[in-house]
Length: 77
Picture 1 (cartoon, one colour):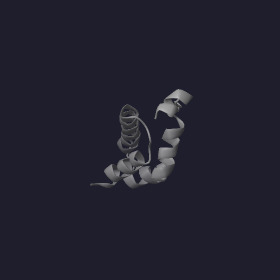
Picture 2 (tube, one colour; picture 1 turned 90 degrees about the vertical axis):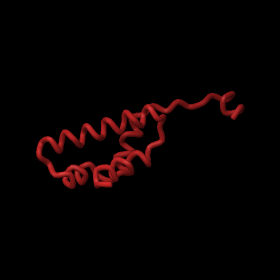
Picture 3 (spheres, one colour; picture 1 turned 120 degrees about the vertical axis):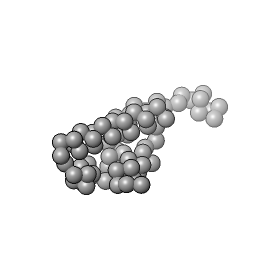
Picture 4 (tube, rainbow, N blue to C red; picture 1 turned 60 degrees about the horizontal axis):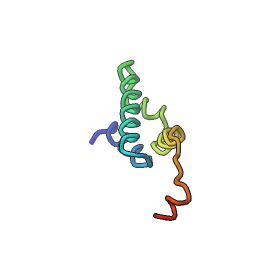
């Protein structure tokens, strides 16, 4: 596995979201990185500027609205 795939895998590992949200996040992350690569920036520079995988995951998670279960749904669980 190359550095790009490792980075994306680690970001997604730190995200708690539905499969649909995870696919959307992965697509956004890949597009963002690809744009930078297309502009001639080296992969290591792109990943370095993005920061740690945990920081990137936290940023994506902050944009996902949380839908808390109501009392009865929690009670049934």
